[in-house]
Length: 156
Image (cartoon, rainbow, N blue to C red):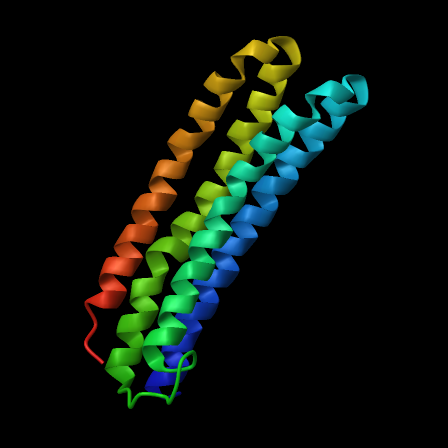
């Protein structure tokens, strides 16, 4: 493998793992929300908001993947000459959002599913359920920032 291939492996991991975390998290909430909406269809809007929350990790992974593709020249013009160590630097820079996106997407889904239960019994407490879910999001945002700072610190 050459440097560009290794860097693109990092892009694939960021997009893929964070996307998997989001897909699992959104699925977990969707299952809970569908159960509630069968009993009370008026709660669709509230539960849809909760279901959307774990989807952000996938967006963060996609953003990181796009940055890698842009930096190596896949997007926006000619490929840059890249050594194997530089490729590994891109791969390593992708890991914060890849790993944290995977794990936090799943756990944010679990917290959001619990918030669906809160909305079922006390719909006026939706804001509190969102706050609980957003606390998990904080770590995905920090991982995204770490990956971006690492990526822009790599000279190419």
